[in-house]
Image (tube, rainbow over all chains, first blue to last red; front, side, top):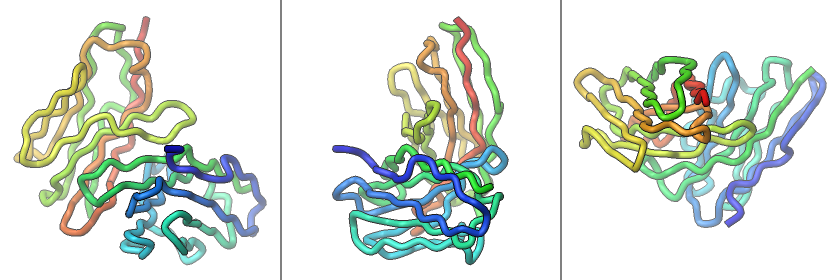
Length: 114
Length: 113
């Protein structure tokens, strides 16, 4: 299996621009998670989906952030408009089940907003 | 919500010695505690986990202990090797339909040759 695939690996954009991060989960996994990692706040759960349905988006920081999962093999995290404080590494992870199942993380997207 | 504290933030040990990383959690309803290892430039990877009905679990050189009364759990790595150098994260899951993880801030483990 190819593992969780994220694109792009690096993104540099200017403040105010729209940013879209993409994720392809492992085939057969029913859960998909988006995390953000910064030095100050560590790894934070932003949102997760079960069978393409958003279950908990309480970690999404602001209305500028939105996530979709139109089908079982694709998800996007969009930031519009982007701000310098959004600079972080964004990880997507997937798992076969809920709580007790291993979450497989992708390589991450390093976002820099100038 | 759940809050997970992790200590130390950096740990340097001699190769062959043992390393211990400790975490505490706040929500007594938490019942699943995984540990993840993150190497430079990569995503975290699960190395061991423990459920609340178990006090200790071992996997070769790695062990995890859980004290539900005190709400803390620890990772023990014995006979450390250079490839153990990485950032380690503890996490907790509350369950009851909540499937996301709350992570500690991480421990940078450095194995000195």
